[in-house]
Length: 114
Ligand SMILES: [Zn+2]
Image (cartoon, rainbow, N blue to C red; front, side):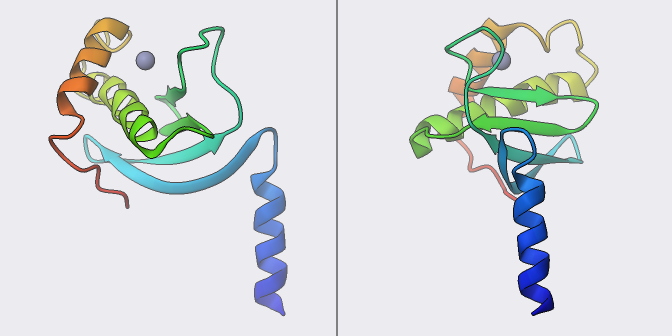
């Protein structure tokens, strides 16, 4: 009974705004980041399906992507986070560099979900 109640509360919390669920965490430079799936795309860029919030250590992924696209989007956001984490704030907003790194890394390693 109590478990059911807790589950319901969690579901309600997960519906705040348009956040649908927190799925897993990933480590970026040793810092756990929560990964959420969110309905919709981000910012005004229709081709951007993810977002990282450095201060909050959170990554948001758009729902409805095929697994390969979601994985590459996750790696893309992690590349932003890695550049930020190593102190290269001058590079962490460079979308061309970040996407090149993400494409290079995709398929080389599997992201360890924690
Ligand atoms: Zn980006």
